Amino acid sequence: ARRYIEQRGTAVLQVVEHHLQKSRISIALYGNRTKTSSVKGGCTLTEKTVKAQPSFYGSGYPVESPPLFRAPAQKIREKYCIKFENFGKKIVYLGSYLALQEKDMSYLNNAFNSAVTWGQLTITNSGCDHSIHAWNILPHIFCANRFRDIEKIFPKENGLSKNGLKSACSITNLVMYLYYQEPMWKQYVIDESKEFLQNKHTAEEKAVINGFLALIEKNWEKFSLELANLCKAHRKSKDYGENPFTRKISFFAFGLYNFARYLYREEVKNIT
Image (cartoon, rainbow, N blue to C red; front, side, top):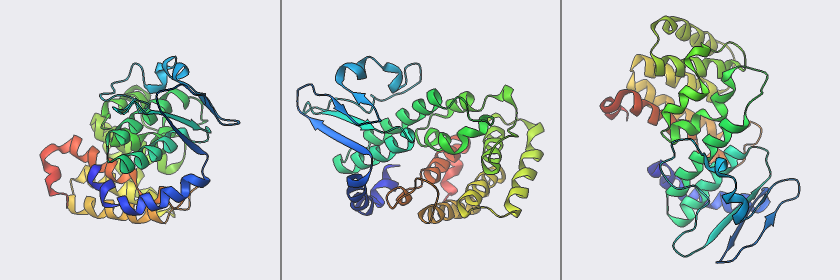
């Protein structure tokens, strides 16, 4: 993650500086004093409310590093007031910005953990099955190396996904097969994915599906190609909520690499 972010660091910082001026994210940096920051229609956070909401940081979940909202050595306190349109994605991009600005990748790591926990606490009723997590939380789980959380969002007892966005169902089923290694699922998952690829879908969706299929096949050349295709497709994404800054970084791309490393350990050295 550090190498990926640093390679794109200059371009990302230039875009985010421009975007943050127009976004609904307000960052307030204060010294050693208490102050309340608020956004109309959003949230209000103070030191007291932050301490009173441990679940905001993921109480009960295995977070190895301190929360995103922390006091550095200089006693600078960070307070974020974010309109809740898509908190998970916004906090991750904000973490990316701070990681680059402060040259401290722990901001990004903490942002991933916050986004994963927040997503699991808030996405409860979507009108579809567990596939709702495929695009919303899964990339952040991969990036944070919190692979045991797959058991929380895709419980084995729930079985394969059959209700939701087609790409999300396919991604969910591919991940469940790769993680649980249930032999009875293999052929169904592969056939479903190949059928999906034969129809008209976005280049980003197809790159993700092809990437997972390459992991099943252990085809490292194909997997490397699909990571590149995924980054390229994401830069052209026109999905709702995307902007010049968010298109700079495909978290699903290096999340997939982390997942490959988790599954196959030393074999990922073959990925170019």
